[in-house]
Length: 107
Image: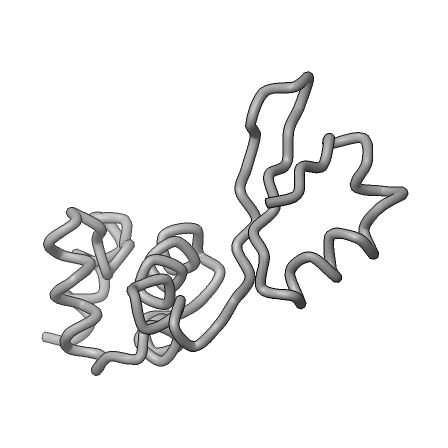
């Protein structure tokens, strides 16, 4: 595993890319302390659950919709909703007042 200091990234981004392309992990440090671990994407990695974790993270941060999250996670929409629920992540984010107003407009 190759180690890169945070300051190295600008000058050595090509080295980091080549490390990932060769299938090796890379440790990124800040002031000689581990900051993050770079793990190359592969089908094996995705099959081991990275796709689901990535989808949950992106949905939680409002980067993707429920449907897109389910596609990234490679599960059905219903399964993705259930998985979010088990982690306490709401799938609907409405202001209660807006919801009351919407329900009144339906009736």
